[in-house]
Image: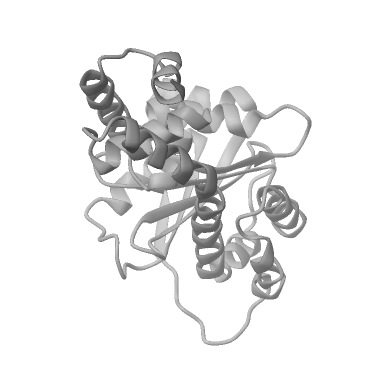
Length: 260
């Protein structure tokens, strides 16, 4: 594994002008695919993921895109998030890094360096990936990691790595903004459902009501976690507490309670 802090240049370099053009797309459904196409054209990456990390919680999948028709990146990202992220060698670099004002890191990992065989297989070799460049930092008080992959027989060149490192800060800022704007765009219906829920069942705490509103909208636990900026395990805890307070055990019972 190779890891180093990225310098913060004062000029505009290579990747940055192209990234600036994506600012207006942040928060839109087309942002992930457009970002991937640009990164693929400039670096040859065939697979791009981004995660948000909070303390003591599983990471949230922000972006998962790949070349080809099958959603391989999404499948791998879900395996990584639910099972394998604790085995990521990048954790050795990021351990103890504060979530505010920290440096930007460039961390390069090859599949052959990963000792955990199940992680290596599920997230690298079984889908033909062999080389990863990870950009990590905390642009808005939460750690974001952006991963660009190439196949085992087509590793990144040194110039590819340098190009990605020069665009690191802009990439982190863009994806951080995309996550915030996407959450904001989803808040309208949730507020109406939350208000109705609290009129019917005022016993819920603020967070329990937020989680229940997301459930009534049909969001997954991952979607609720991303919206509320909390971990998935925290979402599950609030759901369990809310259901216990309300004497229910399912989404259908929650909906009936509110609609009736």
